[in-house]
Length: 282
Image (cartoon, rainbow, N blue to C red):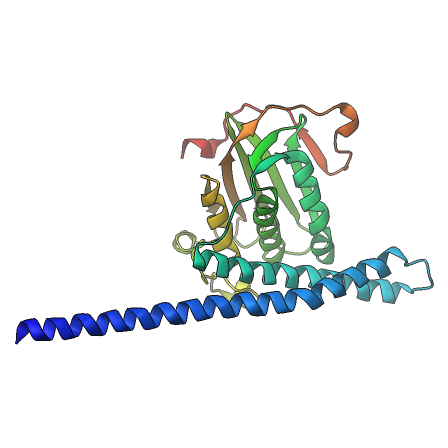
């Protein structure tokens, strides 16, 4: 009798597992389909907004420009959310592929910061970059690294007061590149830090409830860093701001000419490339 009961229980569990797997596959397919459908109209909206911004001498008022900037910022936020949903479905299926190539880290940082400026400008926040004064080439997925940095900068802006600085720092140690994003926000408790990079987790307090969010971005950031054989972590205390850092290996050699050096006035050259960041020991 016991053997019959065990067999029936086993068959029931197998059936439930198959049903759960089918539901999970249906969910992933739904996320992928909806995200792709949203991406098409958003691409058109973004393109026409950019065209209007470039032709602003054609009689638009300051109010018109201000409204276009709002559209531009929300296009960026919606685009990032759609990308997160697509990546979530890929991770669910184990289908997130890396496109590895050599990339110039300083140029990548500048592009990320330039793309982030509309969000920072909306809160009168400044972005201060500390980058090496020599070009460093890294063998990595360029777009995925940009995605991680954009996510960290967006979170820093979202949870920081108006008019505060956001710092993004890039350093090299041996074959690794270390990135850090520091804000002047309300900070994160030690307990919440343990769950920060898990799916759908959001810090729940009075400061965060008023801010929109899905709890997907940092999970994807951690997944991308893991796929690069790197590590991501957070250092924070309530009321004292937050620093999120990560490293990825794969540094290769390469130096750019002076004409290719970035000229952005917010870039602070950092020449001690081989100093060991304090997190490297962890």
